[in-house]
Length: 188
Ligand code: CTP
Ligand code: MG
Image 1: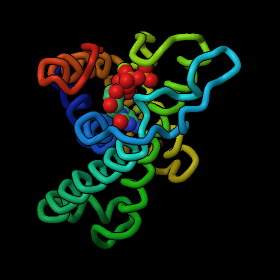
Image 2: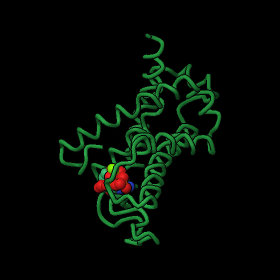
Image 3: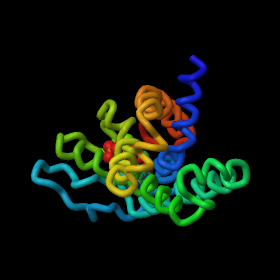
């Protein structure tokens, strides 16, 4: 039990930047939509009015900022851990990882909206599991392409399984919060 909780906590810590991007977009998004208002052949928007340039940028910047704070905390307390992964100090290598996490998270969100629209679901309509896991899978996909060593060596399957199991619940909780704060139109 303790081991499982530790795996979850470690997984959340390592993937935290990816978790921050979406809420960053919700809090700071709005304005011109990424799809420029274009509509697909099924009459639905390409992405919808809920996917904006400002939200995309805000999500990535929020992820980078929070990730830098995490790296500062790590650098101060766990320098040996960094050298285990072949880094002398917190540096550019880790900034690249943060970028992959933030961009991957937002790309997963955008891709999910594209799929929803092609399935004929309007903005805000739920698509269970995809709504909850889009950002995590997007971040892992970019890591797999850009830094597979991080995915295999740092995240590993135990953390990945715990995250897959617990993220839907966590996501739901934060969305209820966003809804209560009036930042989200639906509590999912
Ligand atoms: N948001 C944004 N830009 C993004 C992502 C999100 O501006 N790239 C903001 C929008 O105001 C959006 C809100 O965050 O309405 C909630 O995001 P999300 O639930 O992902 O979008 P939905 O509006 O529910 O649309 P979809 O059905 O496409 O998920
Ligand atoms: Mg939504």
